[in-house]
Amino acid sequence: MTHSQWPAGYRINPRVEGPAEDLVTAFRDIPVAVAGDCMGRCVGARGLRAYHGDPSLKLCGPAFTVRVRPGDNLMIHKALMMVKPGDVLVIDGGGDLSQAVIGGLVRTTALRVGLGGMVIDGAVRDLEELAEGIVPIFAAGHTHRGPSKEGPGEINVPVACAGLAVLPGDLMLGDADGVIAIRADDAAALLPLTQAHLKREAAIRKSNEEGTADPERFDALLRAKGLPV
Image (cartoon, rainbow, N blue to C red; front, side):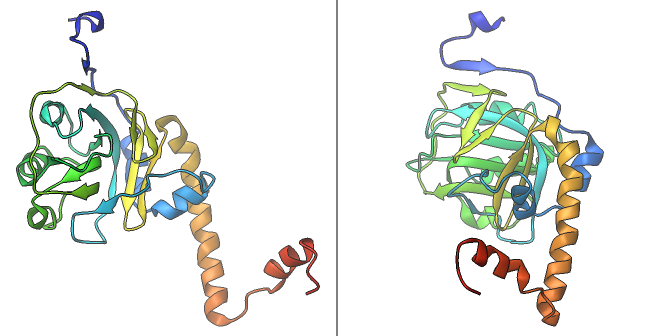
């Protein structure tokens, strides 16, 4: 079936390859805050919370995107039939919190297929099961009310997720601080910047601990604003 033959509101595109596996592995050691600092400090999802219980559990993998009608999870089930181990399901549910689009049963399938995590601009349920961990899950909220399975929806299309623009194949990072998306084509160039940033932070942290930080670091900024320090 060609795209022109899809029913209105439905689209299923093939999976998009993300960054090379060695890049994905290297980014597992990069905190979201550090990646965000190196990307201008103005990108990342807003208003999501972690539902996987363990704050040390991190999300890192290529984006497999899904756009659903708010409160409907038909296309999420289809997506779980298409993902590869390590993929991160990024679900644009329009921020709707009236019906959960995933819960404990979807998590069971996610465990079986080796999903790398889920980022959901929508609601979840079955919080006790989600809090068992293993699969990192970030969502906008929760409710006991379950989803419909009627559609429409789209798979592997550009989505907006909690203020974050995500393309299929983007590298998704998530930790206790939040969630960010890195363009697949930018990942290789960004990695050394984040590693250098970590080294700079380690040096600053050491000087803060030892009380040897150079006061000129901030005094120069204040003098530039006209303050007599």
